[in-house]
Image (cartoon, helix red, strand yellow):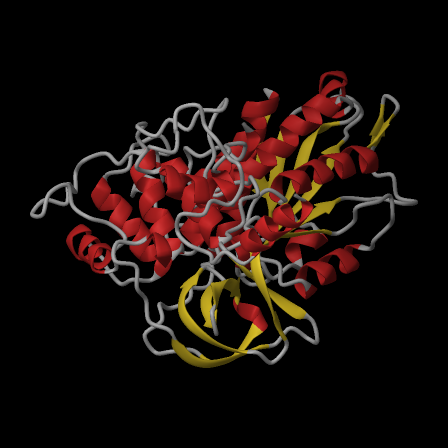
Length: 472
């Protein structure tokens, strides 16, 4: 009996990898082995490319744009970390936000002219064809040519021989079938692909696992030693479907060296960086160290403005902007050092944060800019930035609007970039002091400064609409 069991186990170990094998015992209450999509759904589910809800897969439910981006993103190995996206209707907390943003950066999926993504909109079969063409580099640029490419490769088929059903909403079962076929050719109709190229494994003295799918979530079917010759068929993100002798499967492309066949689909394009990444915003908390700044009612300016600046930093950290604080601790910097730092990091926008004082007799918020084209050629943009921040601060804090004005201050006079100096309120005025002393109100001030910066960049023609969601 023991010998019989061992024989069975050995037989199972050497079974070839075929389209009928599934990755793991992933089961859904509403999808049994007789369902037409069972092999493909099981394959993708075993590799965590698709999943269900509460044990159900809902094969007949329409696929939304958010779900399509997620499934494609997982198949391509894109970064799915939840984060701020380019789209004003995709919250950073959305389950699909990371995949939507990554797919958009790779030009796999796009939004609409109004800055929306419309994540809950259903995907049509024609749109599915375009998405898969973009994801795998098949070259189809419209619904007709994209559908033709998928049918030529045995990935998709029409509703009838003469009707692809371009406008029909695609179901989860069908999307899974087409995606599985794109990833693993053995699921395709009349499954055949060409292999070629002159490649070798470069595993640094180690072995390279050949897997049934494009991630380590999929089972390993073999290990290839360093220097093993392989042929390639096509790409799935950073993974390559290869053949070496009788072994076939997917491997990481960065562990191969040599020449790929000319017929292979191209790699995904490099992520398109946001133009905002080139914009360096310098936040300057005034005073610090032995210089406390203004004081009043037990409060020191240097502490108030540093805390506010750190809150602004936390908001900028959620955006593509580059940013730098002149100080992040209670240290003293000269005015020249602050300006030099802003210039050395290539600052494009400079915001110095302060609190005012005048014997308790004044109150309100104001923002200064240096109004001299001779010494600072950015005075016009500085004025726009000052007004944008002033508008937001007065609205957020409901303080007296003292307006914007010319200020002959070193940090804005000597800077070679749009620069402003913000006076949040009067620290020696009881009403203003209550806000300056409150962490909640300082957060409101930080958000107002952040939104003012966005308003300024929006007026300059940058797409920042999606970044307003950061404060929601």
